[in-house]
Image (cartoon, rainbow, N blue to C red; front, side, top):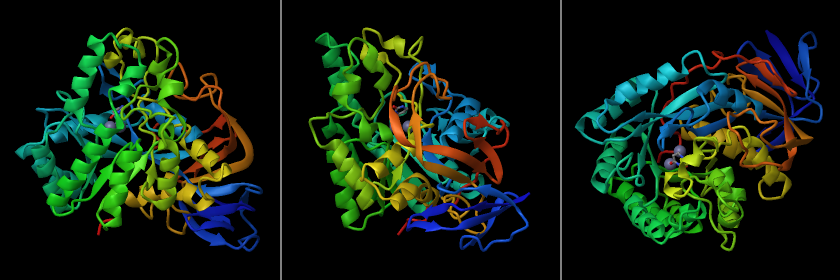
Length: 466
Ligand code: DUC
Ligand code: ZN
Ligand code: ZN
């Protein structure tokens, strides 16, 4: 089916331009100056709307087994919620646990997703055990499976943790095969000491989750990862969920030297704080227990992160969507914050929350689109198939209403969570229509998509490598 999206303003990283967009089947086939396209086609009226590439959330954990439970969104519920929020592609993390064959972990993630996803999806691979076998598997995943990025953890000793020697070996392998190393940069062994000491002092509330993960331990790990990547002949390195000013300083310094170092942040770090959310009365703060943690409002983290997004020291905004319900899940940590499953759900709200940054004068329209769609596509080898409105690209398109408003809350969201981390927030802008590979999947508040529409996206190498 062909149709013309007429009367809207197409937004690309270079800014807004009035244009009509012709979709044929699953692809965008042409852009026209307003009113100059073919007249005999079905049209979709985009008057007053921004026409943007579908959002790409490059960091999600659907139904991830973690912290003694499993993330509460399945691939079906989570990708449907993502669609409601204007995201048309996710890149989730398949997991190899210590002692497991990497390809078996990947097969398990293909089994979880098959027939269940409402939008397109790719995978990064978490390496829980770096050894000769898993290093060999990295080559095979890059060459044959469309998986070109591998996440390592400097945190969570005994779970996903890799020591510096393992990290260096994986980085050397990535330097050889062109893959990206994604790093959870927090000094896990040092954090474990602080956690033990806090619990011994009777500091058991969720607030202490933040206190025991100080920014210095994020900055130190970020710096160490950058130096290790340097030893590995400038292996491409992407710091995930960067939350702290001092960690950002490390990334900025490396980038100033032209290093292959990139970073993402997440909406929770741009808006929420240690005191106001994690420090909420009683056990309430458990809703915001995630790692890296929310940072203090008395320091300059949030302002620094917004600046980092403007200067490209932060290239991408992802969600680290890892939802857990309060009931039976977060509650596991009543009386001991270290037992609260780590994670916040937000896959539905990223596009809107970042648009609020445009309204607040913190980001340009072009930078909004770049950080939520175009750069994730280029960073993770999906461009120009995804992340851009251009002839030949997949027709993943969002009509965004800048005069609409979005109210966020558990009553209206579509994620499988019994609370919202953003309860009661009312923000500017609203997703109006969502198109995934030419199919309208959201129109207003109505859902028109289906499980199984989403396809696996094998990815190429990052475009940013120097
Ligand atoms: N951090 C979280 O908060 N959840 C999932 C994994 C992670 O690194
Ligand atoms: Zn992480
Ligand atoms: Zn994560």
